[in-house]
Amino acid sequence: MTEGTEPATVAAVDWGEYVETALAEISQAASLDELDAVRLARLGRVSELSKAMRGIRDPETGRTLNDARQRLEAAVGEHREVLEQTELERALRDDQVDVTLPGRPVPRGHYHLLTQMRREIEDTFLGLGYEVFDGPEVEDAYHNFDALNTPPGHPSRSIMDTFYLDGDVVLRTHTSPGQIRFMETHEPPIYMVSLGRCYRRDTPDPTHTPTFHQVEGLAVDHSITLADLKGTLLHLARVLFGPDREVRVRTSFFPFTEPSAEFDVSCFLCGGAGCNVCKYSGWIEMGGCGVVDPNVFVGVGYDPELWSGFAFGLGIDRIAMLRHGLPDLRLHWENDLRYLEQF
Ligand code: DAH
Image (cartoon, rainbow, N blue to C red; front, side, top):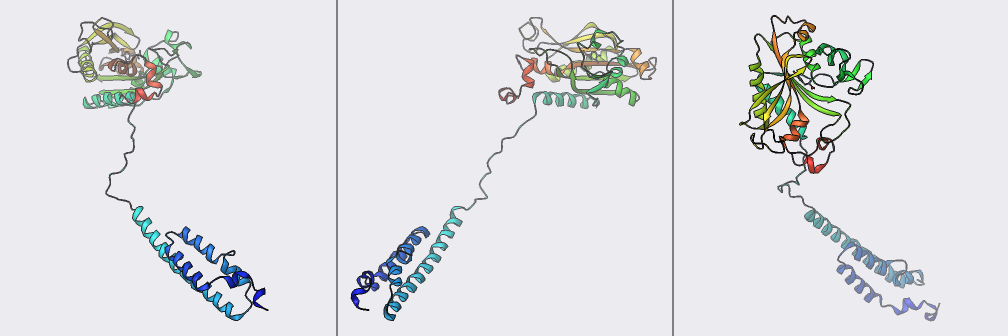
């Protein structure tokens, strides 16, 4: 084979210079990507070296080119290790976690206003030596009505007012059946409160929600008087509305108390002078109360000649609404963060 038939590339390239230039490029590659680009250009399938190797016709050229290829491959391999090491060190340095930095705060939730009030009331009565009792929300008509001296035909028993689930099974309309359940399973003396959800067939509006909360209180002991009741209510009113509050009691009627009363707290906003929170009366209605009716005692097997007691009940949602100046009772149920986050 004559010189003239050899591929032009082999003859035209100065392989010594090719290797020197390629070695310089390899050592200057600043990243693995750059190194790879140099490797492709200098050793890849379409590089001048590869093309020339495909046209090798004599051993000497073969040695020269193989030698060149080996030197370049070795250089690429060495430089790759250097780069990999540097990149590893950089990654270890950059990704370092400073465990002494303060953590990112996780936003924490808090109790719903009604739960807060419920616990406030529970704590108040626990402090007075009362027990906290949970009654069932699904009740039978006996505990919700009959045992509370509320006869068949009483308007509160109407299907228009009470949710009937099945026959005589109802959603409790008040926490008062808790009194009965507690007395059925305990002997006097009794000091207990029962708090929880109640249900009535009310159309939701600013002052009604079909689900609401009540707190029930019951004390049974020897010689309990109305003065004990009033003192207890005064204590509760002052916990909820401030130390300067007064309580007044007005006669009323409930089937399970005799005498019965409704109790009011002096307005916390105007102090009794009259404002729109107390509807210019100076008083805010809190709930119902009274002396336990002897019929109720007889129903649970207590001797009404031996024991006397008082009971009271009030709506937590309403008290919360008044205390915090809420315009609408339904806010308690709407999960609106603008409301929730204020309390
Ligand atoms: N249960 C009554 C209601 O829901 C409130 C009530 C009144 C509870 C008088 C009592 C009480 O314990 O003595 O309207």
